[in-house]
Length: 299
Length: 238
Ligand SMILES: Nc1ncnc2c1ncn2[C@@H]1O[C@H](COP(=O)(O)OP(=O)(O)OP(=O)(O)O)[C@@H](O)[C@H]1O
Ligand SMILES: [Mg+2]
Image (cartoon, rainbow over all chains, first blue to last red):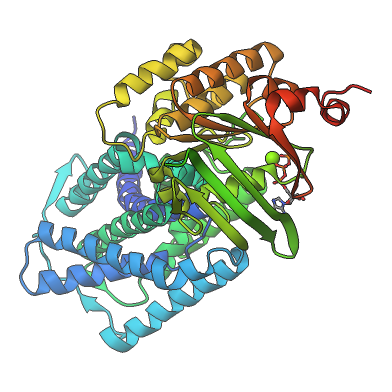
């Protein structure tokens, strides 16, 4: 192998690593999109704001001296509770009003948080404290930071937890039953309103975790930070197959890797365009998403 | 003590401007199999949805074991002792048979649950053979067996069955109706909605005929089975 080619491979490996890091964040946010969609067919465009709220809770806690892990957990719970409140105050009253009303309401909620956030928290970006000292490890010519490793590990742990929750616990099975058919679930004695609240909680807690991890990675938080990642996570959810939990993970990773490869090998100004190009392609050629199939259901 | 388990009094149901149920009153006696017959669109499913609390009634009352359950939410109705196997079965397609049955027993905490798994598997051995298979891969008849078993797992006093014979091979219909009789003999009261009037009247004690939202005929099942009008309308005799 020529030396140039070896360096090219190192570059690719670095883009892949960055892509997986970014993709993990998209995946964590996309999970909430897909879970909420799966259960009440709502595209919750305010979902990116839960990510922002998580980041800010993490910011304030870590700034006040709390260690990283408890701050992360409290930020998750905080984002989750805000989502439960929003579902209860905003979405529940209009649940039967049709999808367009719900979509517009979600956009309104999103704007509310963005602008209320600028008003209350200040519009300027804030420096996220270095909760964990950055260390860089070198393998050949590939560099990886401990922050990246923390993001991978946290994401994997959260996904294992979600898998266990959805497949092995009673409340998780009730979530699956409710997302299959709300009336059938009620006939089992399942309080579907509670299950919907719980789904919002879990989805937003994951987004909140992503917010804190991003704060750690990029060292900055600001009230508008939820907008672009929120939209990209939506693309990731659609790419994987909206409503399908593993789809959100795959969609997030594919999107993160695609972005970083394009930016690295081609032009960096296309970073944000990639997501929307992917969205258009997927809607044209496989609207059900990567994992989406025709439901096998006997009539 | 009265032996009435469920009583509907002058029950009306509207879907927006559509008046689907025009004031029906009926009593269901503990221990019986009661059947509601009627053509498409008569309001049979609407009745069961109203009893289960899935849709609100616009007038009248629903009384179960002496308690007014008229505006009780659907999930609470189950805890009162009413379970339903809905029209079209509605089994959770991507969950296994075991998980579907677990959902049926969702509210239970007693220690009889395992006996009831054994019991439904003895009624429908096919389900046991496929216990870890997703419900969506079952045949229509097997899904119906699962839907009935799932409702039974709630340990109800009143079991509502909406057209269990719909779209199912005749040989399986026989098995299913035999199982309904067994469940009833074990002590569960059954309200069976059917278009297959002959099969339903053969196993029922009491029958009601519902036509466009009103009860137009009622009586002991044996009498209805011999009634000329019913024979003409539902049993295909001319
Ligand atoms: N969700 C709904 N919205 C509006 N009208 C409805 C709705 N559900 C049922 N209806 C109407 O109410 C009437 C009774 O319907 P229902 O489904 O209860 O009849 P059914 O006796 O169960 O019929 P089938 O034998 O076809 O199942 C019908 O005229 C039907 O069109
Ligand atoms: Mg019906």
